[in-house]
Length: 127
Image 1 (cartoon, rainbow, N blue to C red):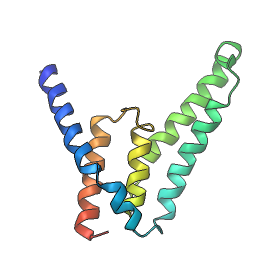
Image 2 (image 1 turned 45 degrees about the vertical axis):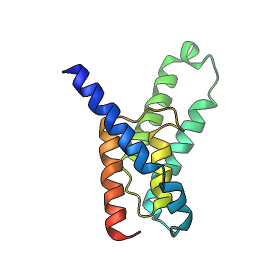
Image 3 (image 1 turned 30 degrees about the horizontal axis):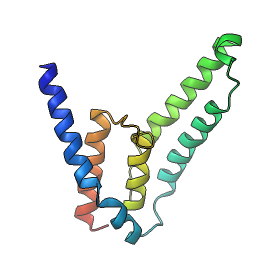
């Protein structure tokens, strides 16, 4: 069963990646107004990640509780951003980049399903 799930994930990911290949071109033509709620969610996630990445290197050993709080805040902000709803193709591309951690292939099944649903919605609206 694990093998089937892995194969399904790989094939689904490849199909999603192929569909996404055209999105940057579409996003360039798409209206860039977008939604305030979407921008706030993604901006908050980006800010939390930047803050976490600027913490002192030895914080985890010097103050484990503070490190844990900062890490939890970053993860919480990322989860909110994962569930943001894009209203334009430009937002879709930003969400895809966020969920893939800048191309590091960290896309999980739930986020892949959400991205596919968002893409179908945007396509149906002719966004």
